[in-house]
Image (cartoon, rainbow, N blue to C red; front, side, top):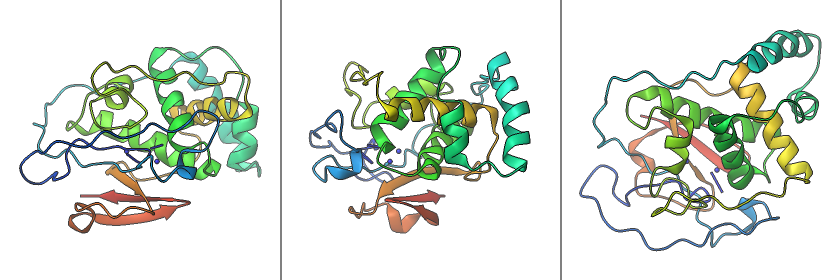
Amino acid sequence: MGALFLTLVGGSTEAFGQQTTIAQVTPAVLGTPAIAAPQSLSVVIPNILQPAVQTQAVTAVTSVAKDVAKEGTWLYSHGWNLAALADRYGAGQPLDEEANCMAVAVYHEARGESAEGQLAVARVIMNRAMSGKYPTTWCGVVKQPWQFSFVNPRTGAMPSVDQTSACWRKAQGITRLAMANVVPSLPNDVLWYHANYVAPSWGHRLTKVSQIGAHIFYRA
C-alpha cells in the first residue's frame, strides 16, 4: 500500500487474537513500484489490540498547507485533477519531519499506484494518527514495528529515496495535498489496507470500503 506489508503493513498475523511472530519480509527494491514485487508482501495488519489512548493527534496544518489548501481547492473546483495538482505541488518549501515520513511512506508503498491510490495511502496514515488506536504522529504511525515492511521493525530506519526522481516529486505533491485536505479521499475511519495479491486472515473481519488500484481498504 509497499503501503498499511502492503509492501507489509502489519503487526500480527492474528490481529484479533494472540500475537504471533511475523516472518522477515523483504523490503521493496528502490526504483521499482512496491506492487511490482510480490515477495514484498503489502498488507496492513489491523492493530486493534492497542489501547485507545486519548491523546491529541498530529496537526501539521502549517502555513504551507494553508497556502496549498487555498489555491489547490480553487484549482480543483475549476477542473484540475489530482495528478495535475500533485505535479504542481511536487516542489516547494521542504517538508518538515512529520510530512517527510508520510511522503517516504507514499513513495515506498505506492509509487506504482495512481495519484488517487497514493492519496489513499497518505489518508490511512493520517487516519491512524487521529484514531486513538495508533501512534499520534505520522512518523510514529509509519515507524511502528511491523506496520510497513520498508521500515526496519527493530530500528525504525527507512531506506533512502531517489530525490531526483519523478516518483519522489509526486509523493511530495500528494503529501502536501493530503495535509491541506484539498481532494476528497477515504473516510476518516479507514485504517487498514492490503494488496490485492494477498489474502490476510483478518480481511474477512473488517468491512471493505473500496479498492483503488492494487490496494483494498477497510474499516472496522
